[in-house]
Image (cartoon, rainbow, N blue to C red; front, top):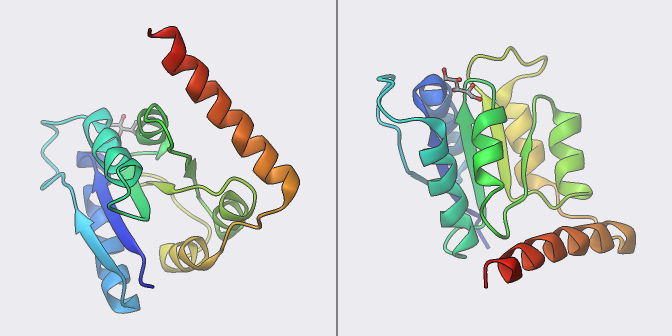
Length: 156
Ligand code: RB5
């Protein structure tokens, strides 16, 4: 079944977001752009990290792509949403391992960061690599879920 992808960026990631959209289209992926709509710095990265993360956490989208200047701020914001495992992927190795080991459901990229490899390659690897399903990786992801659950409990 075709992956449904939510994509978002702040102003600093806007140009790379447009490039990523073109690449996704060429590769035949379905995506929804959640903004920003320009390079105007009127909205900050937490807003778009949250939008992408909530779109994925809701189950409406399979994966998210979140872009800011470095990918760092927007990944921190996205990771505050329960169920989200956002990983910065500056190269194909990071992109691949984030899927194999961490089952990352959001890829964070940096519009102001020079990558060693074409973004198109990073995207292909990240979108095509499946979670390994290894017991040890599953166990670690469950430990992350436990942190999320304990956080929800302390709110009571
Ligand atoms: C915006 O200037 C920049 O700080 C932001 O896009 C991002 O790089 C933060 O991590």
